[in-house]
Image 1 (cartoon, rainbow, N blue to C red):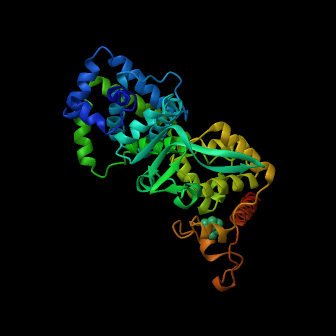
Image 2 (cartoon, protein in one colour):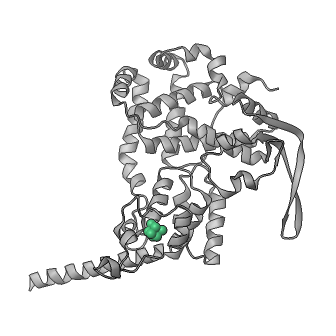
Image 3 (cartoon, rainbow, N blue to C red):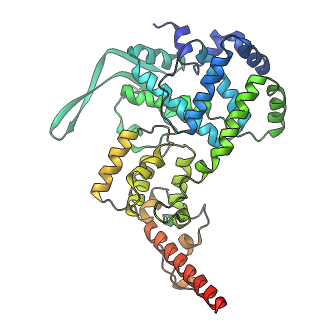
Length: 397
Ligand code: SF4
């Protein structure tokens, strides 16, 4: 059994924080914030928080000097107050992704697996811990037999709760070994689920109750140090938000507004990636194959994934390059519909919904492939350009 105080200090998002640090939980936010900033470590805290936001804006996956000392609890709580005060989903997603990735890396580096077990218990998960790890199966990769082993089994209901936002095929119950209601889960996969839990703790939704937010801001922004941090983050955001919002709008060759040529199924995946949401396996495959089919450079495709919670640059680079060499064809519309990835209806897209090729609806051809969408849009755009050119030539004659 590990020292619970030590675990909370390193992982302050645990439910026991309230219990073991009840003196903090009982305080009014403004009182708590004034007190922490009046301490000697106030400046250090400010630096750490700004460093986290800057790293999130720069899309970093880790902070090399991230410290898990006593200030870690204050840092976590202040981040939550700041995210509520900033009330901006894009900033929140970026910060939540970074923080959860830092946590993932810390958990992976834990030498003692029992820490992960204690964390799961603290979260109220029904978990079984085996030390040494137990073997539960074999896989064969290129004629090589490999034993599957793990330190953990988790109750299937708790597993489903943890994995509810991750819809990848391999996470489905049917693809996992179960025994006695418990599922064998590899250490890395369990930690990935914990990462998702941490991310959800920071994913504070933009509030609809703006009146309460304003009352909170009026109170909290009287604290000089908090206001300085809040203003600095907003200043960086204002300066850089265009870069985040229009990241996919730059055509790598002609500087054209290329996103207008993309079908809704593609726009939706790019929107989710841009907001730092999870993408399921099929969404990832499709977007990679689609962008490769348009000769998008590998680095740019890797960049699309850089905002995702589980982004791993090296792995993504390898996978995109692999797909490039294989020349896969992107899914056609029928497949995308069966995968629930067609967005024609929600985007009310005329070309997707009514087809093309004739004025009369009954004579139009149905769109069969997202790449055809881009080709048709490109063709229409070039026709329009030519028409405008001729019109202006006529005017100049
Ligand atoms: S109709 Fe085809 S191109 Fe249009 S959104 Fe659906 S899947 Fe994509």
